[in-house]
Every structure is written in C-alpha cells, then in structure tokens.
Length: 197
Image (cartoon, rainbow, N blue to C red; front, side):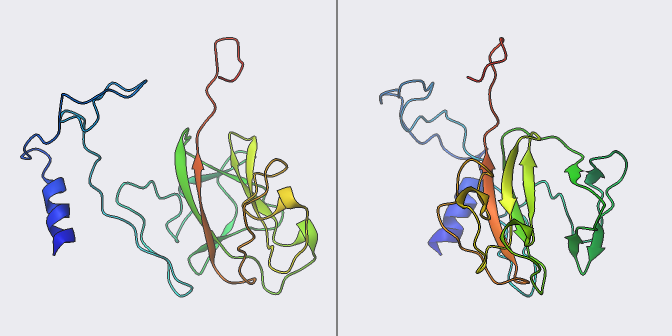
C-alpha cells in the first residue's frame, strides 16, 4: 500500500505542496540547495518489465524503441539504403554479407538496453564465435561475443569496450540463450580546438 501511495503522490506534480528547504547549503557546482523545494522532480514513467527466455519484456514508457520485433524501420545499412538483416521469430538476425546496420536516429548521451543470443550450435572459437558489436560514434565498440566456455583475450570479451577495457566479469549464458546488458554512454565533449574536455 505504501508504494502505490507514493507513486500517486509523486505523479501529481502540479498539485503537490512545496516540500523542501531554502536554508540548506549549496553543493559545489550545483545551483540547488540541498533538498531545494524548487528543484524540478524527475518525470514519472511506466517502468519496463523483465524479459525471460520465453518472452521479451516491455520497454519503459520513455524509451526510444529501436527494434519492435517486427521490422527494421529504425535501421539503415552502413552502405546506404535500407537495412538488409532478417527479422525471424521477433529477432533481428544478421544476414551474411549484408554489412553493419546503423540506427536512423543519432544519439549523444544515452542508456542502451541490448538483448542478444549467439548462434546454436556454436561455430569456431575465440573471436570467430558469434562476434558482433555495438558502436557509438563509429569509434567505441561494446563487444557482443559468445564467451560461454570460449577463451579469448580480456579486452575482447562480451561487454568489453573492445580493445580498451575488459568487462568486470564474464556472465555469458550458453549459445542460444537470451542475454542482456545495459550500456550507459556519455558522449565526449570537445573544446573549440577539437581536443576532448
């Protein structure tokens, strides 16, 4: 009962009384007082649901859904024109020789939720086993790889920032099982001279 009451109270931002203080310190680099009554509240959204091995979950209400399980409307080929991957049983499947695909929309700072399954039966080993990746700015690759009982170099594991940082753990599931990770990406900020801040 408490949780539903709190959700309703925070959902009525317009009618809420001003709670908080103005006689508290200001943190360095912050324009708000601690517990400031005028600080905007976070928006209320409907949270997403968990995916299972049997069925996909639902995205949060504020998410930009890049793949709906039915079409490639939000994707394009890296060679120009429409994406040429396959949609099979609600999944986007790489078609050999089709090349990479890019989202039609461009993003800066973002959180990306990714679900993937590697091929069954596994073919090859090391980097030849279910290898793919998620690229940000055409430069930073988050590795997608079948790392279940598959030895490879540390900064090439699934969820590594490829060639730079290994993941903290190898939590890979068996080939064919759905896996997921969330990437929280902060885009680089550049100075006028082109160097990174």
